[in-house]
Image 1 (cartoon, helix red, strand yellow):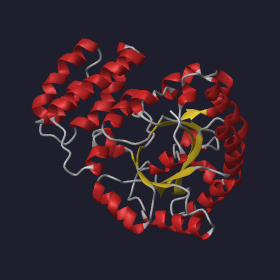
Image 2 (tube, rainbow, N blue to C red; image 1 turned 90 degrees about the vertical axis):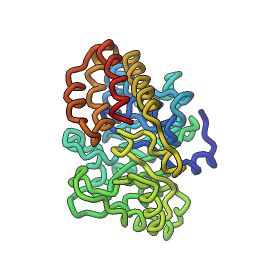
Image 3 (cartoon, rainbow, N blue to C red; image 1 turned 45 degrees about the vertical axis):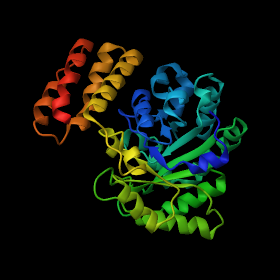
Image 4 (cartoon, helix red, strand yellow; image 1 turned 90 degrees about the horizontal axis):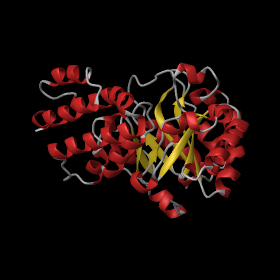
Length: 331
């Protein structure tokens, strides 16, 4: 799928890349639930360089016919690693159909940061710039957009997003997304939405006001989107954890009258599970689906019993017998 520059800038609602959730079946579900743009789980650029695409294929796999426009997200530190990894992706008939390559500059997990990757790149902006400058011609030549996702800052009280965003803009990035927490905050505390206005003003002042800026962090409703939009003229909104148990949040934001039935929830859950089974096999899918379904049943009356039961399910026959029992829970 080739997105024109106009289509690229019109996208408003994004699914955040989340390890353990943002697999292809779930992204398809979010697409049916109204998301405009998907992103894969993060994959190591160096891993692709040394081990090829095959070991990471389940995480890289995209299908824009059924999930809509999508980016493949990579993490790493070395610009040459990124270049080789992206070249391998572009040489693959399936993966080369992605709309964008997204560079993870925001992951706060220790094992990622200690290699200099993820949000650790915010401490070395010159390296982040080097990566963007290395990849931009390659992506542009293949008709792909180059995007970056990063955080408010690295240290607990740090706010370096504006300077970092400007450096990436000058290097030629096509779109940026900011998670309004620092890396040291991880996912705790409240997202600081004021950072979006700070970044937007910095970009406007230096002639990059047209660069799409996507807001991320604690966005759970249309009201949240309106509040952020009033604070800063962002181009769109990226939603993560709020979508894990409610992939219809995108439709709800677009249309306040949207309501999802209990029957549709069950059908969608079963479809997602069956697609995971086809992709991963019965045993792996069964184990991984346990954690994926938990946010769906959280908060309902008697949900504790359902969560305990889910923790024991593995085989396809067990799951298929379980899904119909959720009807009473969801009604």
